[in-house]
Amino acid sequence: MTSHFDAAIIGTGQAGPALANRLTGAGMTVAVIERGRFGGTCVNTGCMPTKTMVASAYAAHLVARAADYGVAIEGRVTIDMKKVVARKNLVSDTAQKNIETWLSSMPGCTVMRGHARFVSASEIEVGAQRLTADKIFVNVGGRALVPPIPGIDQVDFFTNETIMDVETVPSRLVVLGGSYIGLEFAQVFRRFGSEVTVVEAAPRLVPREDEDVSDAIRDILQREGIGIHLATKCTALSRHGASVVAQLDAATGPAEIEATHLLLAIGRRPNTDDLGLDRAGLMVDQRGFIPTDEYLRTAVPTIYALGDCNGRGAFTHTSYNDFEIVAANLLHGEHRRVTDRLTTYGLFIDPPLGRVGLTEREARDSGRKILIGKRSMTRVGRAIEKGETLGFMKILVDAETSAILGAAILGTGGDEVVHCITAMMYAGAPYTTLQRAVQIHPTVSELIPTMLGELAPL
Picture 1: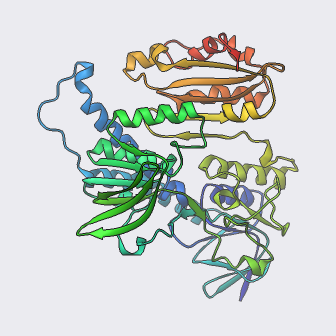
Picture 2: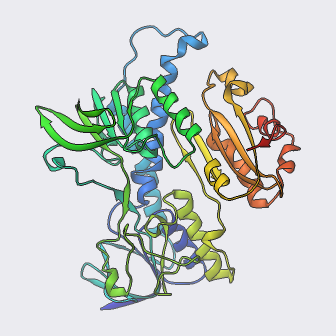
Picture 3: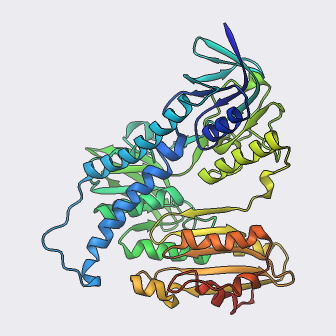
């Protein structure tokens, strides 16, 4: 027997449950299909568990620096990884259970457990069950990319998902990938006591960022004793007893590094390869993403792609914004577009990076006349008081329109501070509005008006 619904949602990441709530609230019948744990990447293997471990690592770092604050700690400080993992699991498990309970008790919502595959553009099979729906929303997320490095099938390795279940501190950890995920774990495990080496194929860390940001991040990590190899590729992997040996090809010549643990952090891929998309009349692009228009509709107008699988942002906040766009347009006749949102994200090392809008490189390439403001965290009272003065803040302004074009806040509280700039950009307010705003003292934010008062041509 085939059941019919007004809408079907495949996956329960950030967009799925919220959309189900809005659609059922509007009187629609909704089927929600989940093959694994409720909550998607963020709740189970991404933001929540990783930031819980980042918090544990920050606590360890503060303990190590206690003497700098006049605090004496007697005895040897140790890391109980089993308790770290248990705390991480509690946070993640609680969140995913809450989502499952929410969906299961939602009036008008039918939860189906199993793997969804398209039969046609309007029909889905979930195991032995079949359903049809007037509209279908694909919210299937992504997973870690495992590269075809020779010998990778002969060694044990971890991804961002499995490394969080390690119950002993790795002795020597090699991280392949010097971008957002890799660097967060590199710092976490270094603070837990691991000897950590990062191998990055690009000539600098997080190459998406400006050079000054990349250089500052490298300095932050190296100060903590993390080894960094840039412009270096891993060409082969092999086992040496209980260890893993990585063969490296660097500008200085071939080399090798041996580790007890290997973390792969070189990218992610969408979970779109086993949905039967072709039977729905859909194709994916070269990277596996489902193409959409600016309203998140696919080539089949009744099918939408939300979250990590559409290639329009691999973040929890962009996935949730996908839901907001779709719900506003379908239920309220609005014309919200994914192209209206600003690029904004964070890198959650310590200190964190908060980013919004254009990078300095992108601003230069735009052909505009640019004004730039920049201030080191060593000149920010709040950072000095906390003893956390690494990093800097930078803001870019259009010299002719006074519009704020972008900003990077790398420093204590940077992931929060950046939002006052983000709000100004969404409001379309000139930089002078923020410059004249009175900020609370003592905070990091209070130096943004000062920085805007010192703008200079780029």
